[in-house]
Image 1 (cartoon, one colour):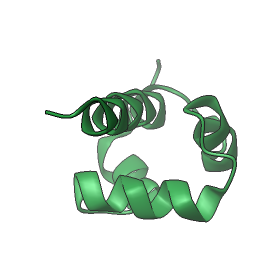
Image 2: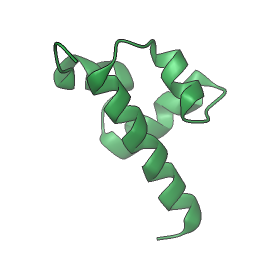
Image 3: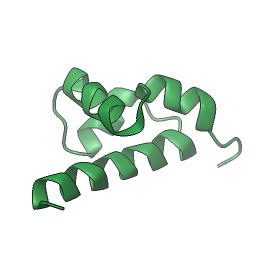
Image 4: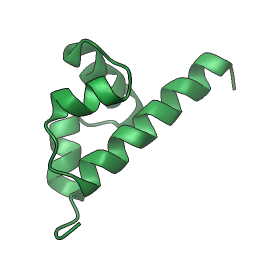
Length: 65
């Protein structure tokens, strides 16, 4: 795995974790994983996880965390 691919997957794993465990806005999460542009973040997330960040949160959110 290239360093660029590793970084992408690391960022998307962190984003997925935050989507599951927090109620932070998606725009805030995108900034926290080093995406200044929320649209670029959403596209990258969908390429890795197969669904948009919003859809991911709707199906994976853990209540009470």
